[in-house]
Length: 567
Image (tube, rainbow, N blue to C red; front, side, top):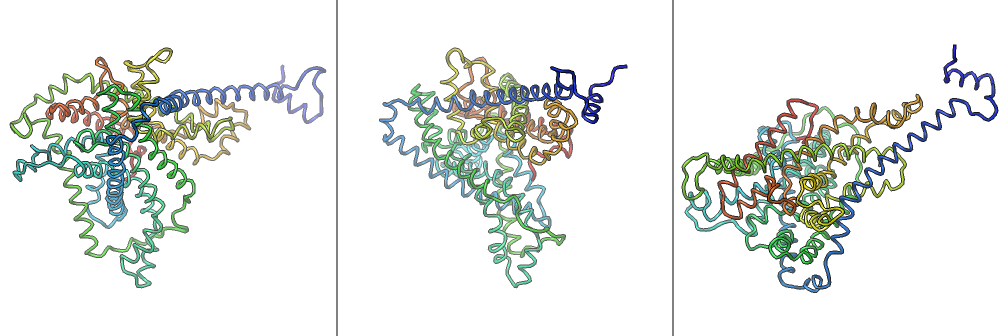
């Protein structure tokens, strides 16, 4: 009977028996073959990840930076450009500050288990995260426009919130949940023991808050400011709906590209918009890299949190209650508008707008189908990228890591225009196809999916990989049978988030849709621009139904395993 190769190898090593002249021991040959196979596996994955990021992120971005010609740069000092740049910075600073403050108040309230009404606050903070951000702008037009329900019908005023004031309100309400999501884990981890220690020292609530809570939360507050700032500065949907004469760079670039076909000037405006977002992005990366992962040394303690003073409790609930009522009015107006015959003129009920939404069902169906496809591609690609960067020693890992998170710093307007210019000619002629819409959704969702995968993969001990390798498992087998099952939570979270992010994307896809291939989000904006409020609310309501349905199905299927937004 033949002796198995592994046994023969052990016998050879124990007895000192030498193999036949000119041959290698079986265990050495097997080891060399496995090493070669592992290198091929890692190389293939690295080529896939690197090629994807270079083609979809680096090439369009670099091409966009070189797109503005001498004529475009000579117009840099034009009053229209200077005004748009100044307005972008002004509204960016104002909305970022207010959204972060409101987000902090929500996070502080949600971190207090003794505070009533947290379930309602949680829902209010979730709504803008799940629905398109520009829906808030559409709703404010319905409520506070010149023919708005509150301004015209209830107060009899011939005024509107269009312009700076309305845009500030809309962006505050649309983006404060991002600050809440960022701040809540830190506020939860600040131990109640420290609060009681402050009380024992005779400190008032305000002194404890100023000397304990704020210093410990400051790095996360700074991170929230930078994150919200990037979203506010690059916002396109709300300014185009409610900005009126208050021009910002994202809308001005859209006007130059679509209205005037001046792509050189549009590219220049996008580059100007890219500069502040890139600065915020780099500062945020530095803050996150230097911040300790331990919020407070020691245990948080089993003591309940120190009770809030009655005046603080009432003030906090009053402010958050007002914001919640406004959020209910906003999302309620979208639903009501979809059933109202002519908003501001004829308040009778009708199903005509839902019929319009059904007639435009191809747009909503395309949004759902393309978003689901993009979510699958994003999830698989980001898991592979996280593994290549953090579990291998392949050359270029640092570049891949940077490119994977770079799209979060690139304005959606810049991505859309750069893709329109880059993929418009052979051999990369993708414009006018469904593929380009799916791929641009992938790019927009890659940063969050990648961060989720990296966080999860860093929690898996490398010793698991090493043990499997020592037992003879190949790299491919380790990835398929060990790593991917352990990354199941990251897979489902990235999949659902990728779907929600893709279906609500506007600024990147509005330049790439074609008459035969439409999407729900651009359709809403186009209808609203032509004053078809009923049809716009009908399509918006339909798109929100698809988003909520997708989240509900995922929640029913996965239960507590799905932790998309930890609020």
